[in-house]
Amino acid sequence: KAGVTQTPRYLIKTRGQQVTLSCSPISGHRSVSWYQQTPGQGLQFLFEYFSETQRNKGNFPGRFSGRQFSNSRSEMNVSTLELGDSALYLCASSSRVRRANTGELFFGEGSRLTVL
Amino acid sequence: AQSVTQLDSHVSVSEGTPVLLRCNYSSSYSPSLFWYVQHPNKGLQLLLKYTSAATLVKGINGFEAEFKKSETSFHLTKPSAHMSDAAEYFCVVSSNNAGNMLTFGGGTRLMVKP
Image (cartoon, rainbow over all chains, first blue to last red; front, side, top):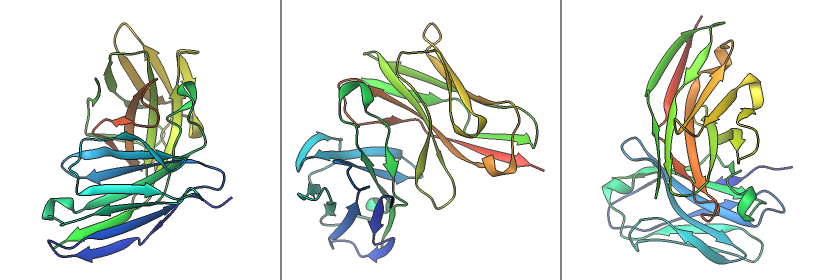
């Protein structure tokens, strides 16, 4: 079974630009979550999607947005990039969305964004 | 609100000696607790999970963790370190009504000396 696939793996943008990152979950997984990882702030939750609906959202500005398609693939977008958006963006998928079974996530290797 | 504190940012052990990575949590609800591992330039992998069943949880690669409610701790241990254990380890908490919204600790980098 193929794992979680994130594209692109590396990208460089300049301040003010926008970026779109893509995530293909494990086949059959309907929940997709996004996390931002930086040396200063660590791992922070961005948002979670299930069946094309946003279920949870972290404490990030509106410049960060996402969506999920009917095939469970997900994209996240960051507009008007700032230097502080430089980070590793991790996508995770899960087959478990019931209360007692959440938290078991399968992570991709991430998209490393550098903003100059 | 929930939070996780990993008490050591770096731990160094010799190969073959025990590993102890410390974690304290705070949660308003009955928490689910996890340990994830991240090898360099890789995504995170689930090591083990506690969800209110047995307090001693066994995970992959010989790791285990003990949930101690009175101490609000969930320390990760392994009897004998292997060179391949060198990685960053994250203690994670989730409340039952938070879905897959996880709160991560700051991480502990484990170094294993030959």
